[in-house]
Length: 178
Image (cartoon, rainbow, N blue to C red; front, side, top):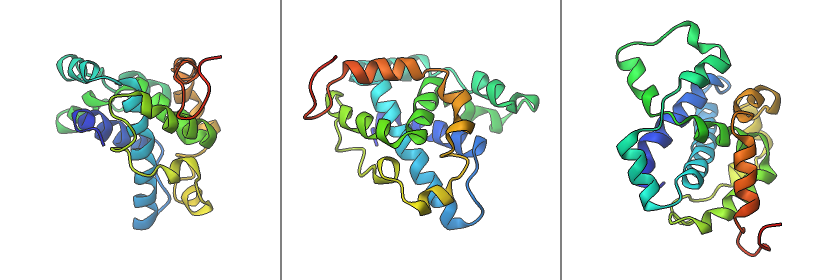
């Protein structure tokens, strides 16, 4: 995990898991968390591909979860105090891109291959198998988190930007832009 992006990755994965909770049970929670972490980590590395991007993020902040909460209807209960603080580190674009990756394993594979074009590379990401080749167990653990229809309102927020970026970023061993 790119350490300079840790606050955004942690908060964005937490937001996804709270908006799309896993099936009951500790193992299900752990599997769903692994899937959310992989998706958010890849999305964050693509969103902030250079050291300068990561520094600007640290300086300016990511924007928070306000619009995401509105889109999912979670803004009815405005959190305050400590419950609100972690939400300020949620990055709307990262969450939207992660939702795209969770809903489409083929797109996740392309995104993972494109990490080589970032300064983060593929070393800090680890195996994204649960994201790119999810097993039936992965789907059972996170039925809401992997459901394309449920993720669509979030994924649609920035899907076109992600698709444009992946089309313009050559994947390892793939031809250049079309």
